[in-house]
Length: 210
Image (cartoon, rainbow, N blue to C red; front, side, top):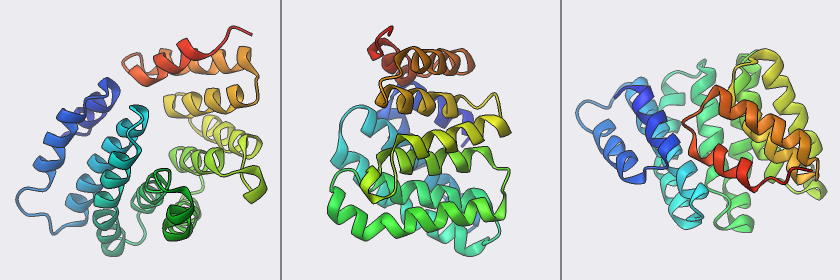
């Protein structure tokens, strides 16, 4: 299952295509860490799209389906930063549908696994984006908030200036602070880097000029 097929389905917000790719990833010999990772990644993309489409319960179901596979991948290859990052991301994606219960059940996993990914590879830009997304959703009173998230997104951009995901989330964090002009600039850069990402275009359209 090519990674670009997953990204293309995500960019189009095509849950039917992602369901097909999840089923495809689960066929055959899935005993290896790489096979389990593909299952986890497909479910994470589907959870992301379900959230974009405001289907929180469906996002939770995809995330929970991916967590087990990500746990198996990380257990088989504990030194792989991406496996731990993805596990942390999936745990975070399982929270929004039931914020209180979800945080109690998955909050520690989300935080610890992302921190482990960064400890394994301190120059892994996508891990900082994942950490920033967690901080974006975590209320300021609980140690999160957009200020902290922006530091993560800026770190990711410093490490990889062509990472569209970092600019997308930076734009959302800036908009949350009512810094709309800067938010638009970040979202426009994300569109330049990934022109097929429908959600980025939707968020840019929703962002006021000033």
